[in-house]
Length: 394
Ligand SMILES: [Mg+2]
Image 1: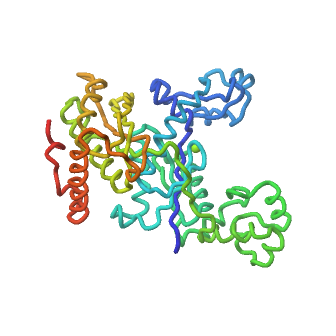
Image 2: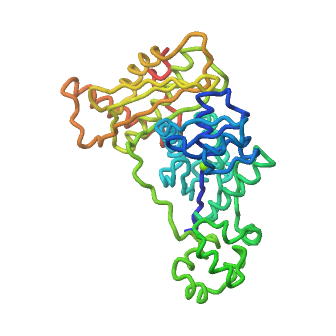
Image 3: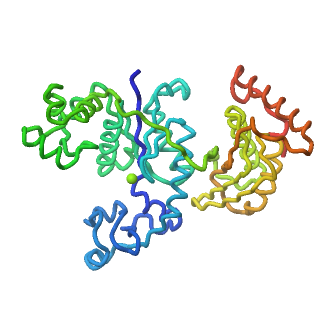
């Protein structure tokens, strides 16, 4: 089957993370430095425009670019934000391959039906959700193979220089040849310097020149790798998206409010709905959680997070909603304006090997049976058909 593959890449990731903490850096030329302030590893668009090079040594750049703000890197913090982004991507599909701290391939094949919209619209939703819920800008390239998705992503980034809102780019079948004509072989992901030199020697300059070569020639000069590359460039996926272990696994839900909120009851209601969805997912996957967190995000993208270890693993709304109320109480501040609330279940264990707590085991079993039958009804009649009393209780 033809695949539909997206590459999601965070823009200027480390700088974007710093701006989440320090919004006053927005709009200013900012660079983040590597370990021990050695060299530049992330640049804001403003710093790029001024001409700061990627990898520039700090001791030179700081004299050359006096107006640029240079920051020491904070990798643990970037990892935390990265995890939030990847978790959010997992809400779209479990077929996600984390390629680096700020990049992931997603196999979207077949998801048009699930989301009831086009693939382009799915990618637009990815951009919007990650911006709204995490505060990070991402670009998404969409096509039929990893190599083309990567190329589409580069195109999106290039277009952003003149069209800042152009966050997604699709290379459809009809565009492949045109796109490849305008792309140097050296710009193709996976083509190293040696291969480039070899191909240039035979006057192959663009990616289109390359796919125009016959298979026998390519095999002779480059072996199977060359043939695979040609297929990927033609839109036939050879290298699949391989979902790796995303450890520690977690299931989370978060969503921006329709309007900014100061009302705790409203926020709790939204939180209850997230808890319901997370529990439903846990039951579907036959899993339980023994650690939960509630996250509140303010209008200005400040995050309040609270975690709670549970005495025993569960996957039941009733208990988790009770616990979440106390958690929300602890982080909610009167008068503060909020934009979203989120719920996350960590430390997942299989429900099958689960020993029901020796306390009220009958109660727990009954609740689980009830909820499983609710899930089934929801499946048959559509989401939201059942409103559990507790979900709306203030
Ligand atoms: Mg990036």
